[in-house]
Image (cartoon, rainbow, N blue to C red):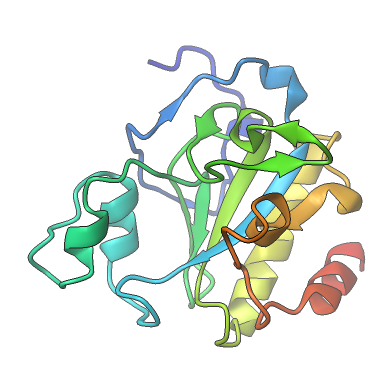
Length: 184
C-alpha cells in the first residue's frame, strides 16, 4: 500500500494502469538513473494491450505461443510509451519497478533500487515513431525536474546496464535526436 504520493510520482499526461509488480525502494531519495528499454508483444508486433497485461500479471499464455515462455515472469516498468505516443504508467516513480534485472551502472549493482524505467513499444531494429520521441522527451523532462540527481549523463539504455544480456533500446533508437530534443 502506498500512503503518501506526491505529484512528482505521476506523469499527468499518462494513462494509469496500476500493477502489483513493484515494491518499496531501499532509499527513495536516491533516484538517480533513467533507463530506456523497448518491448513488443508478440516480438516485433505492435498495438493491443499485451504489454499492459504482461506488466500487470494478466497475460493469457494461450493468446500467442511466445506468451507461454514469459507468462510467469513478474516484471514492470514505471511507464510504457506506445507507438502513438500515449504514455501508460504502471508504478509511481518513488517506488521500485522491476525493469532492469541483473544490472550495474558505474560499478553500482541493482539498478532497480535507484532507477526509473521507461519502456518504448518497439524493437531494436525498427525505427521509433516521432510521437514516441515527443512523449519520451516530455516524460524525461518531468522526471528530471522532480528527480534532479538524474542528469543527461545518467540516462542510459538497458544495454548499458546489462551489457551482453540486453540490447535494448537497440540500434533503431536515435540517441543524438533524443538528446537534442531533450536539451532544446
